[in-house]
Image 1 (cartoon, rainbow, N blue to C red):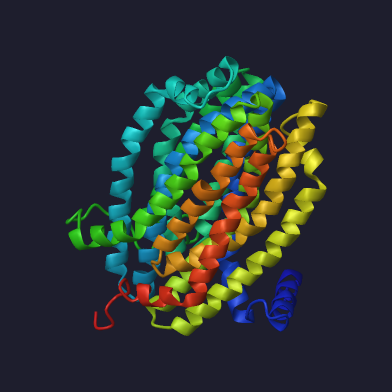
Image 2 (cartoon, rainbow, N blue to C red):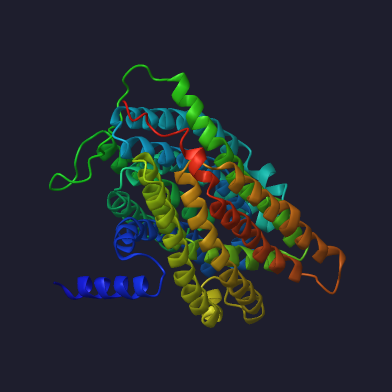
Length: 474
């Protein structure tokens, strides 16, 4: 047995003895999760690289501009993430229940819906970039940088929509290695392209945006090969539910199920994305340095959130497959085990970031005064990531069951009933000031975590899942 396998076996036994997660569940979770963690870091590194490059070359005003533009990119991407969440739920349950034809139909419908939604979004962002960014306020220089970035990067959204469906399809059938390899390759391409355009060709924010858009398109081209049933290397990587434009293209009943599962996910993600606009508008009242600081803090949290990519998708897939097979007790055991494991991982990760917050902030902002404020936001974001991690695993388990309404409502409560009012109070209570934005960073993740944990504990998600499982007689 290799050294890494011995270490994995020892760690699994240790966690099982500590009551964190059962040994076989740990191995199944890690098998699915680690490639998604790498995938998450690869995807989120695109924003990190862009912010770091423009911060290095152009300073905090450009970082503020990209932060404003990224708010629009993320809200549009969140819509696709919601649709993709419905895809993994229905693909995992139908594939786990042995109905591969219906799982294939889910993928086909999801791709078509992504194309229908993606084209107008790209056109809107590309044509209206400057007035959109200006809505958030800020100084003219920040708005100019943000508008340039958004207009150039907008076409990449179309390809990102397709990439999300492909990634979730592979996850739904239990393959997270293939999308990891493809996404990691895209991240390397993004670094190379953006660095060439920004540092080599002196293209500024336009170069960072162009590098991201081209790298995203390249990922789509590579995904298309495997998604149509063709293998990559040594017979590996072909999707077992290959995409084909067979008729009927639209199945009304299936479309209804996708809409029923995805709508709350889309709404939840939209709520998460839209709240950034008033938050950034509030931050803009404190100046571009504050916008840059909150942008850096949220970006670091997003990068740490890559662990959630793995735990959440593992929870969705394993819980969904066990439910599809009628094993509700096993599904519950998977859910709780992954939740406890994510808590442990995020406490360690958050502690490390808190300790090294200052040098991390220095990657994006080098002026001492500006760097201190960014480091403060990084520390608070690191603490909030613990709640983000737990909530991601709980939400993943609920999503695997098709129970998506409560996570949507809990997200609304955390964002709009607590976080946004806290941020606003900082503008009217001088003693609170910018501290309101720090409270908002914590509250937007802590509230949904508490609500969704309660929902999972009630076991009502098991009853919800019975309406989406394949008929045993099929």
